[in-house]
Length: 102
Image (cartoon, rainbow, N blue to C red; front, side):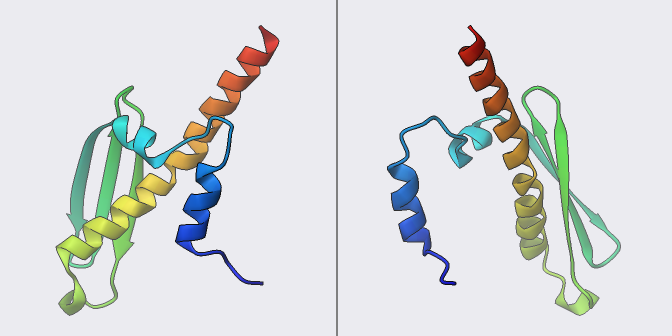
């Protein structure tokens, strides 16, 4: 099975007629992002949304000599951000259900 490219994915998403969750919308709801280092190899990212809800992601490397704070923060942020997709998807489904019931 061949996986589509990012370019093709963006093309298909742009052609989707229905309302959907977007990265830009989720980013607009982020109120605060905090990073914490644990020991010499672990980075934790906490994303707090504008309603106070928060999610966390982490990254780690095996050897302290390989630790890079920028890499750790990027991977930890991405891991936390991925947790937002199902949450915002749930909210959109609820919104659509309420519209259909009205």
